Image 1 (cartoon, one colour):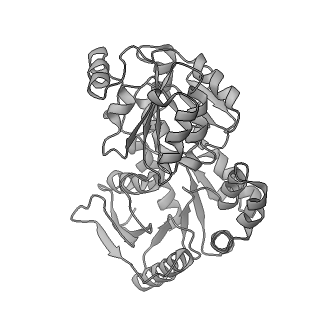
Image 2 (tube, rainbow, N blue to C red):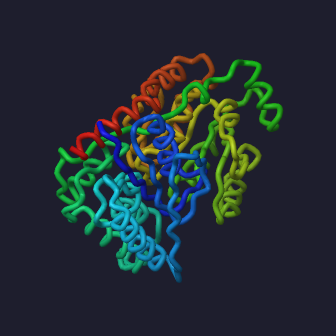
Length: 375
């Protein structure tokens, strides 16, 4: 395959973001290929290598709609001027060649969110100008003749796109995220003890880890309620402007001493390694990287039907899948997992399930798709 110029479009790179990590991992995976790698972004805080070309595209903005529309117009103008061979967008921008639906389908997220807000707010949710803009931009992108293929990180999202936009199934490619299973590994017994002592978590306790920012969407309310009637501890890694509300919930449910808020952490590995399971009752999430990372560390996973990561879970074998709001089922799942993940069959089954999710496989799948599209 001859060298061609690939442009990846992502409005803002946040080191803790799942979509952003896909971009950086894809760039790293493709680094030794015969591609010229370009990134169109408003702000890039990630790794940069000498042969990566970062195009800063930062028009003025006055609000959420202005931010989205302004970047979309400016990014499209830039890629049309540059005449890239292939434009892969991670934003809902009509006119791209290839779209990665890492954020799922916006209407599906709103439907899930409507389940947890008061009835009078539901009418305004779908009437909101910003949400209407995003859904219209999404529709225009899927209808645009330039769109030749879509990458999904879960079969769940593929089916949603087919149902909501009548986009051809043969143009939708499910490519799972990669995880570095040499970095994310189960601890040995001594490491687990040392980490528990370092972070002041009882060594003998059964601990679940919750990793994610945006506590409402990721289901922290349900996670706290799931552990409240048990003796289990919950390690919360992430940030949210409403954290105080969740701290008050833990106090109300009389489990505050077992719910530990660690905020945003530059390295999540220690928190996986001192846990016995991942508890992520997310309302809607196409496929969070934290599921792959936790499974690589030998943790069984409890998640929901609204999470694409459920596709990797076999009930009772390496975790459980429940409805996001079914607190009783979540509690049952918490109690059904082993009190210690280390050396458990469930933990070993979790790790073995993700061993094929490598950068090498991700690179091969992407290159195969790019080659097909360029032809």
